Image (cartoon, rainbow, N blue to C red; front, top):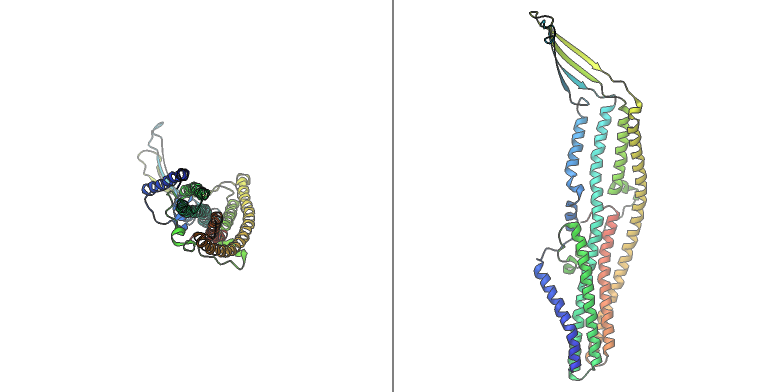
Length: 426
């Protein structure tokens, strides 16, 4: 090997050693963790959501509201105590002690409508949680498959670098033996430098994708399940498409949430129609009194009812607000239904396209591997020049990259179809 050839090889060798050293330090600093699956990422992300943390408290509030609607009085009973005396003026011994209970009564139809409102609140709370889970699943799915794409690109870039280094070492031996010129050595070293730059770029993209997923789950993702077990191991089950898309209204969390919101608003409007006045009160009291000192006390019982006058204007704003909420929820449901159907059609077409692309990409990768084997043998026999060998290596690497990426895209397409159908990660 000539002096100039040695100097040129010293240019890429420190870079390679630096990359290997950085990778070794990173592996030692980061303890190994179990392979992160989509279901695990979703579960971790959901536990961090505000809706998950407030779910139990909201459910308890709705149950308490339903229990209050089952009571016999509109409000808890109140105790009234009073004492009347002339001690501060004449002081003739006049005394009157009174104790009573006041029971707020339901307005006509108010109890049944309050119970219906509480039931609607329970259903709306449950559908609100499911819709929040689906929104969280959408964010996790997007970040998760972007992370898998980045991992695949990084693994392929490292494999390409390894192949380039092996080829450069083989060329160096042949240059030293005088079989090849220094120009061939420069081309091989240039291929190594290009592969090193690709590894650095893929590592940067992987770090960014990992941080995005970590921001959702709260912990760094573990080793790629795709890299360890293949893409089929982490692909979600392919869902069955419904025969009637209208059935999605009751099963899709996003649509069910809006349906329950509209029902809740209608129940609130119905309750507001009967709450045209404050609740009447039934009172029961007993009194002991005497007119003068020395006279015996007399016992009396009082039964009364208080009926407030009603005013339609006092409750008009409440009814109008409830009706506006119902109209808004119905309009949003119609818009959301159109969006869901369009997303479902798009996801279905994307899945079929991904299947066709995967078949073609696998065929291309197989042919490229066979061609690389042929040209590798012919190059070793001196029948193929180095530029042709480098071109074949590049084509094989690109074919393998396309096959790996298409396999991940197929898994992401299945996940997108499940998202469009309102299904959570499995």
